Image 1 (cartoon, one colour):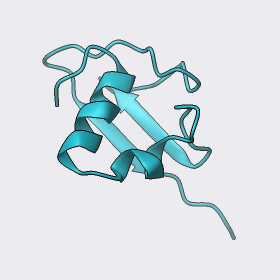
Image 2 (image 1 turned 90 degrees about the vertical axis):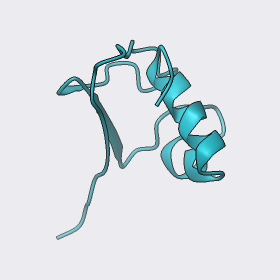
Image 3 (image 1 turned 180 degrees about the vertical axis):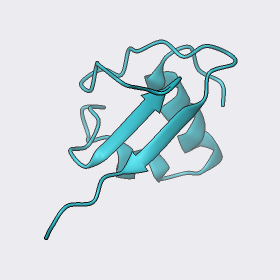
Image 4 (image 1 turned 60 degrees about the vertical axis):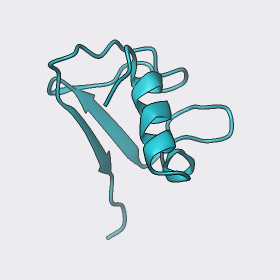
Amino acid sequence: MEGETVAGVVRTLDRRYPGLAAYLVDDRGALRKHVNIFVGGELVVDRERLTDPTGSEEEVFILQALSGG
C-alpha cells in the first residue's frame, strides 16, 4: 500500500476498501483502542495522528486486539 506514514497507508486502504478506516480509526483519525498497527515489526508510537513513517519495503501489520476473559 502506498503511504509515507501510517495515516497515508490507512487512507490508501480506505480508498481500496471503502469503510475500512472506520474500523481502524475514530472520527478524529486516532487509532481505535483495540487496534494495533506494526511497521517493520515495531508497534506504532503515534496513535493519535499516525505520523510514524512507513518505508517502501516495510511490512505493515494491522491487528485487532482481543479482550475479555
